[in-house]
Length: 465
Image (cartoon, rainbow, N blue to C red; front, top):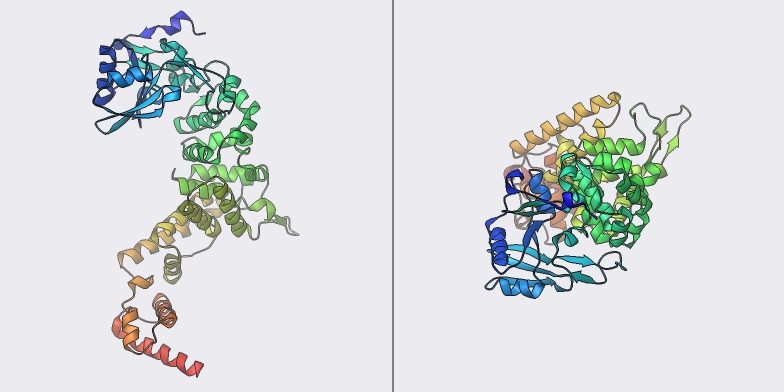
C-alpha cells in the first residue's frame, strides 16, 4: 500500500500547468455540485505533465454510474462499459469517459476483470492501474493525487508498474506491450523489476488478439526510441513476431555491411521517418536474408532472392496481425523493390514512376536512404545515387512529363476514330504509345502520337494477317 506521505495531494500552486478543456472542467464541476469527487486521470495527466497535448481526457469519480448519469442531465451519455463502471459523456462534441472508483477482481481472461467492486476512495482506483505514471489524478483546486510517486518517475523518465509487476501483467498481458510502447514513444527506461517481469511473463502475449497487438506494436515501431526497445526486448517482440529471431546475430560477410542483419535493421529504423508503412518496410526489408544466405569461395556472403522472399514474409506477418490491405500492399512492394538500382537515367526514373506512382516512389527512396545509412562507409556512393534519383524525379514532375497513361496526349476515343477496334486492342496500343514516350522515341503530342498509332495498328494487322 502507498504511504500516507505519498497519498497526500500536491496543492494547486505546486502543480505543473495542466489545462483540462472547458468541457471537462464543467463535468467535474457538475459532479462536485452533487457531492461527488471527480478527477482527471491517466494518460491525459501523464501527457500534460510531460508537456504533450493529450489525445483525450478521462475522469474518475466517486459517483456510481447511475449517479453519474443523474448528475449530468442534458448530456448525451453512452453506456460504453456499465459493468465496469464506465459511461461516455459527449460534451459539446467531445467524448469524455467517466469511470467510478473501483477495485478489480480476478482476470480469468487476461483482459477484463471478472468482477469489480465500486469504491468511494480514489486511491483504491489508482491502485488498479498499470504504471505509476498513469496512476496520477488531478483536480483543478486540489492539485495532484500521486500515491505511487508517478510524478517522480515522470521526472526520471522511468516506467514502473503499480504494485507487483507480475500481477499487473497477469491481469492484462497487453500491458507488457503497452509498456514497451510507452518506453519507445516517450523515451522512458523500464524499471528493473518491471523489465524482469516482462521477460518472465512474455508468453502471456499469446493470449492477446492480433488486432490489439497490431495497434500497440505499430505505435511502438513509430516511437523515437524504437531502435533501443526492439534491441533490448527482441525476445518479447518475438513472441508474436518469431520471424525476426533468425536475423539476430546473422553476420553478412560483406564489405558493404558493418552490422549483422538484425543490428542493420535496427539502425535503419532510426534512419527513417516515423511513418508506419516506412518503419514496417524497414523492419521487414531484410527478413528474407536468413533463408537466402550463401557464401562464395572468397568468403563473401550473398542473399540472392531475399527481396521477393521478404515481401512474402511481410505479407504473411502483416495479414496475421490484421493490418489493412493497403498497408500490406504498400509494405510488401517497398520490401520487394528496396534493393533495386533505379539509377538517375530519366527513362528509368519514368519507368519506375509509371510502375509505382509518385507517393510510393518517394517512399521507396526513403527506404533506400535508410537502408544505405545503415551500411558501411563503402556504400556511400549509393547514397549519392539516391539523391540524384530524387533530383531527376523532381525534374520530371516539375516539367509535368508524361509517365503514365492518363498523361498521354492521345486517348482511347482517338484510336477508335482511326479504326482501332473497340476492346483490349485499345489498351494494348495505348501502352505501346506510352512506352514510346517514356523511351523518348516519340513526343507526347497528338500530332506525333496519331501517326505512330496508325503505323502500329497497321503493323499489327499485317502481322496477324
